[in-house]
Structure formats: C-alpha cells, structure tokens
Length: 360
Image (cartoon, rainbow, N blue to C red; front, side, top):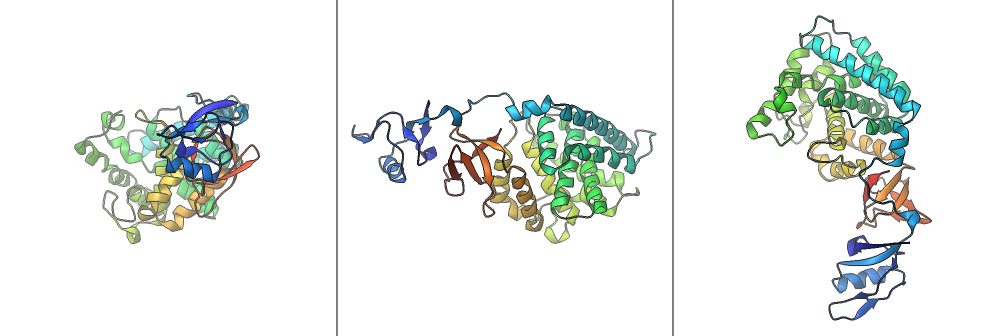
C-alpha cells in the first residue's frame, strides 16, 4: 500500500485514512485506518483541514514520470508504428513539395492527387479514429512545426469529417484544407515562426496576416473554393474575436469553422518549448468552458463527442494519482467521464474535485 498526502479537495469516499487527523484545537476528527465517507469529507471541510494522508493500493497508483506512457512506448516500438512513421515522413516530403510549388519557389507542379494519395496511405495504416489519435501522440517529438502541424490537422479533419458523415469527396477536400491552411506562414520570417518565447505586439500583428497571405497563394489555383475560404478564415471566430477580418458566425464558411476546431485541438495537445502537451480531456474541458462562444456548436459538439468516444477503454491517471479505465462518457459533460478504478466506478461529473490528469 502507498501512503499519499493529498489535498482534501481530492479526497473521495472509499479511501482509507493513513494517519490520525487533528483539527487546530488538537481534537482528533478522523482516526487512522477508517474509511472516508461523504460525512467525514464534510467534517474535514468544516474543520478547515487542507490535506490528509490516505492509503492507496499499489495496483491503483503509477508513479509520476516524465517518460512516455507504457502504451505509447510499446506503440512506438511496434512494426505498425514504424510503418506509419515511414508513410508519415513521405507525406511530409510531398506536402513540402506542394507548399514550394504553391509559393512559386519550385518548378515542381502542384499535384493535388499525389498529395491526397500520400495522406490516404496514412489513413489506411490508422484504420480508425482512435488509432489516428494514438499515432499522432507518438509523432509529437518531430519539430518541423508548420508541416507536422498541417499534416496532423489534416488527419484530425478526416476523422472529424467521418463524425459529421461527410461523403468521400467532401472529406478529402476538408483534409486538403487541413494540409494547406498554414501555407501563408511560409511568407513570415523564420525568426518569428520559430521564436521560443511569446511574440510581442508587432510580431503578433504580422503573424495575423498569414491567413490572407495563404489565400493570396491559392486564390488563382484550381483548388476547391471551400478550401480557399478555409485558408483565409481558419482563425475567424463566431463571436467576432478572430482575425484577419473579425468576421461573425454567419460570414464564416462551414469548412473554416470545422478547420478552426481541428487546428486549435492539435495546437493545444502539441508539446511547446514553454509548456508540455495538454491532456485531451483537459482540452475538451477548455472547449466546454469557452468554446461555444467562439466555435459553432453544430460542429463543436460532434467533435467533442467523437473525441471523447475515442478514449473509451483508455487507461488514465486521475489527479489524485489513481489509475483507472474510462468506461462511459457523460454526454452532458464530455470532459468528465465515468472511470473504473479497481472495482469502483468514479463518475467525474459528480466527483468534481477529481479530474483526468493524463492518458496512459
């Protein structure tokens, strides 16, 4: 058994007290080896107890580590991932050729079919949306930001399209929008794109020009108009807070609304110099709190539901260090599913002091 000192906010019924708990008047209010109940949690709060020691069985705890999870490590070492990574790197090279062609810095002609073909090979290796997100988690250590991010967003867009029941042609074009959405960034100075610290106001204003720069590169090409609009509008927001034109919901194209969600999701779950990647369930929670003003609910809800469903049966670590398995999604609170820990079921929509800290 592990003895863990945890905040009272993370104490749940069923835990076993590891040390006697005393209040400020040195009165014992909980005894060692007693089981925590709802009543005892209330008592702890009444007496303003900040933290207590509890026992947690070895089987329910994994030590915090900076190393990748066992699942991700095993997947990275698998033949399946090695094959996926080969196709992934091939797609990156094809995407680079496409960008160079569209920017006029290469004599290689732009070949949309070849580009889509290379990504479809990746999708065949993934076989499902869950596998797509697993594979993307494994590929996070690549640092070629523009191309890696663009390819990741394209793969996310394809999964998104299946959740929206798009036909094959529309799904491919949405995927193409994901591939090309950041092409305008090639027109920005590298010292701004690769800056490891926060951008200043002037640099940020310059970055805000990249959707318009990207649109200028593709507007006269034989590319689906929906893709062109998505490149121009993918940073617009339904409440008018986006850029470059501060459009409101009615003026933003459907492809751009969908792409905006996939773009933000990949950016939030990617590692950055200044922070580690964010757990997918935390991203879902952020969308639930702030997203319905900025993103169209007709697209955001299916995305969050599809994403949450991907993690059914996934092993997760809770904020109190317990390890369990996601067994059911709460449709009214997608970021807070039901987690099975040993033989206990923890409904995170009710146990609000707990949350999913990481996917294992």
